[in-house]
Length: 165
Image 1: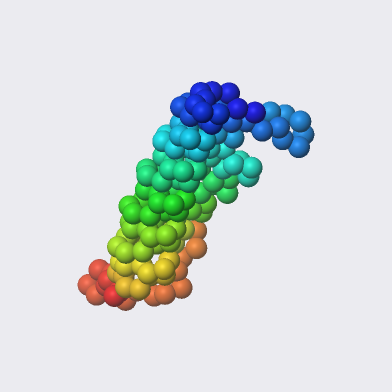
Image 2 (image 1 turned 45 degrees about the vertical axis):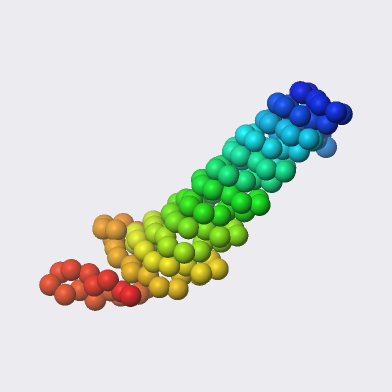
């Protein structure tokens, strides 16, 4: 079910698309801008798994700045290209760990900082295809309070932790 603006028998302008779910309830799917029948411009999208996206679209795909809240408690805020994370962004994982930095084609790519809050460590470095290739890691402080302290022992000199390269 669509309620909104039309032009030449296509959704065009502002409109709301809803669907009838399996349990018979009407469920909003998209509210936002349309161009020639496609999501294009700013809009809000609700997914079947209850994830929610708010941001820019281009030809039905997330493109430009936007943010998504995943049902598994994850969150991404940043730029998108062709429906994938691309450019500068921040990814918060369900366990609270945070990556801030560069993305390409939906993966960590380039420089960034990864905050491992579960082990109370911060890692700054370079990523390639979602894998860290070079970094320095240090304790955030209060290491004893970490949920899962790392097994890697960091040697100390004069009470200071060494940075690992």
